[in-house]
Image 1 (cartoon, rainbow, N blue to C red):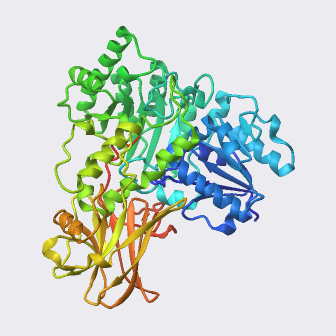
Image 2: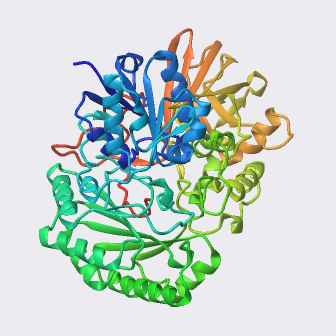
Image 3: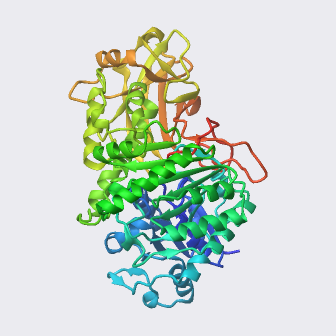
Length: 615
């Protein structure tokens, strides 16, 4: 059967497995032959076979990967009709069609417009009469909201056309959950800068609500599909509507999900929490932006009422064995006020710093950053993972940043300690103050041949190592051949970061060290390697032998794969893993996610995630 629409998710080097709900519902609106692929798995022949290629630019962090993916699509299939959607694409539609060879950008409610666009392209009709499009020129077609019935009919759960995502959503991750998300509302009356979906002009005027019966039908479908987890986006839903939905779910339940996440900024009454406990058999995680940081800000009376509501909810949740609460804040004064209103000793209520979500993106009252600025900001995103995976001392110092989305306190108040790598910490803090991301744009590495005399450690506090990869300290080293070092050259594509280089290893060398360059003007050499060795260095053990050895390091899905080659043959391989993904107990519908090479198949096992703190 010929392929009509190919959807490719570009990732972005944070959790490349998470797929936007709108992309899924838009593809499900089609009754044409379709296929979903991640950028790391899609084959050139699949791109060539597609009449229409759809790509999402949902989160701004994905912009560099998105741009590289577009270059590949146009190189492989110049005649393809390329359509782009997603929250970020919606705000940058005019800039995108001017800057890139894109045929259409969909803004606002996308499902009905996407279906109409696909039919128009296949029939050879101009799409200028289809609402919610930005076309080259630029040409803006009229904005049109969906009807409540059309919103009720959207399907964000069916993904049989996207095999790798069907597999991946049976896995846990520490953040950026790739479990299915079901929007209960679309749009929000608020404009909170740390909530990516609240910027109302993303969808247009007004707020759409899924009906209670429509919500129950989708939840029942998810349970029948064997989903382990599901996320519900409710936003600042009116209390009366929240009551209708929670009671409808309670009457239809209990549904056997292991974890249900509710992104809910309306304080639930005790009756709502009672209903949620009856509705779901597993853990329920509530996540909300602190009302003091809502935009526009509530008046004093409304703020007091909301805080009273959250205090009562927190006290009720404390008595629950299956509900927990996370309140997000970005200001110290907000945190203090929350602690005053809601006891910090409550074990089932957590307060987390939301500042990492105040990224460069559309926000009321601020100028829209240009695509060049946005792309340049996000380009070194990979350096955070590189610091964690390839440099043990940096892994320890960067660990408090979590996964760049979940901080416990303002990092400018932390002590970085002393040591030769302190300059990188200072660079990360400077970047965090500027763009709310702990990046290290100057981070670079070299390969250094060495001789080890003791067994290497295969685990660290924040990373796990496998294969021939390990951590060396001075007592492990019988010799370091720094003059034979060579830089690891960086190449980034739409799916991975590649570091590669070659060294002339002495015959007695039996390991390759991955050594970060000095953060300042200091020269890279033997003295520098000796200075940072006490904090630990990543090493790949190789068979001794004279000659050129090539080392490649690939950063992919929060892992680093290391491969050493001599005379065209692989002589050693290893892996560093950040514990980001974790494997679940297989069941009838629980398949493996993806291997390190990006193909469907078994992936690394790990510790189970509670799911708390995902946004």
